[in-house]
Image (cartoon, rainbow, N blue to C red; front, side, top):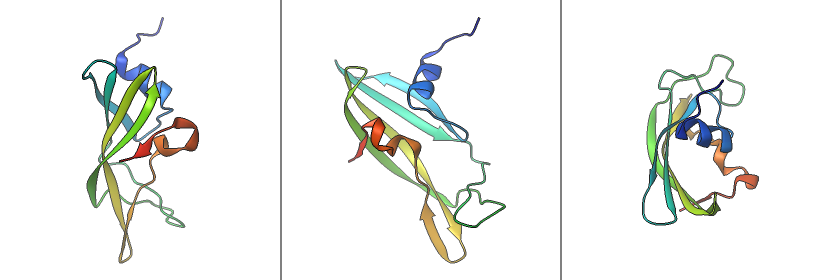
Length: 106
């Protein structure tokens, strides 16, 4: 039997895969969720034709909102990694911004 946790529930619902994981979930005010997502710092992100990948150069704190996620207003809070590719610094695309997820940036 699998042990279910709040983190597992949200990782599964958001279809998170390596390197993303749920750091914590806060049931803030009534009908509001704050979902904190992290990533494994040693993960090598692949950009364009980069075969080896690159670890995060730095991060930027970003917030997304979905007005109806499990019948709650949900906010995803994440320090999104940016990688240096040559002289260019690029922010990594995050999986919860897929159109079917309903999260929009604030």
